[in-house]
Image (tube, rainbow, N blue to C red; front, side, top):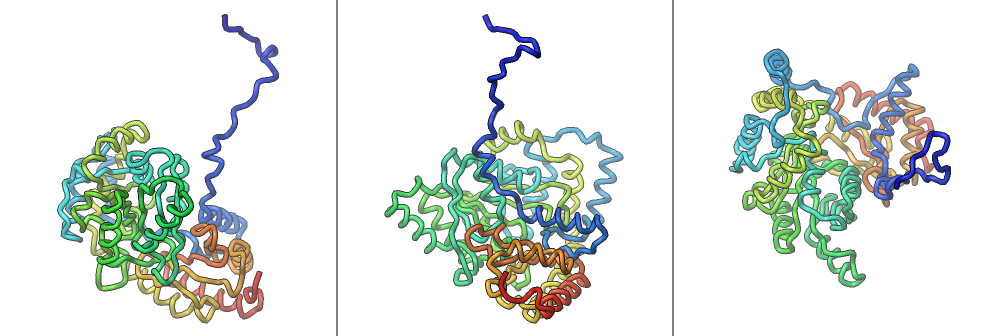
Length: 417
């Protein structure tokens, strides 16, 4: 018979449950820590120039806001299908055909709660606990943290200017060779690529994407292509999509309405996946999210008709980029990654500090300019790098460069920490 206890009689030897080891190894998202410090400074009356956060300063397109207002008035905003509204899935499929000439079945489109939701569902559907997934370092920190939270093993590939901070077949071959020498940790099951990249802004060209897709196909590895910054590009050739190659049948292509479409807080993304992953991701979505945000879905259907307005945003990012690339060297930031796309500049500041986190803290406290320390993106080598976002207003870029130059000139921002 199971004993019962009163409140006072409950056994004092009972031990509280421990925090799971898996969750205790998840690092904070440093940019959000910097944002919190910047917001605290503002709350105390200080001014801040937000060059730390990868968020458009522009509102959602006018057509999206109008569609949302209509949906609020006309729709009860009930749950949708777990895979998303059919009209939105069809719109996403048309977008790929219009932008890339890639013909995909709308049934392969999975609408998600932001790209973060897409990554989680994709990782859970494609991999088993303990599987190893390669990714570039520096790279978006949430990749490795979502992988860890799903019981997967991130394997970081150290990249640099010689590969434009992108993975290559040669780096992957070297990884497999090292695994063979050292016994490895099991076979490689996935590769994450990001083009344009966060934090470096570099892009894979069509040949580079094709080479990685071919390598993955030959080795039985899932290619996960993060295309969240597609549309924000500064060359004459658009970023390559994994869907260009054999219809993306061996790839998981992930995108979002957050960046190009300027809809961060609407929390809406999508994945285009091979048919064999659609049903597993649907079942996961039903249980984890039920469905993506209904209001955001109705509104996003209109986003594809707002290209002229959105291209105006890209033109502003280009001006901001040009301003900083011109002014940053004079402020002591001379070694910069090529900013082919997205709205980031990645700077090597090893001549000034070995502690980018302390450097950014001092910079915020003494100048009001908020930057993100590179350790967020590369835990091993990021102590001497910073990421600079140029998603804000043009005047903020000019003023930030002026303050950085004055700070360096004062001697406070010169030399090593």
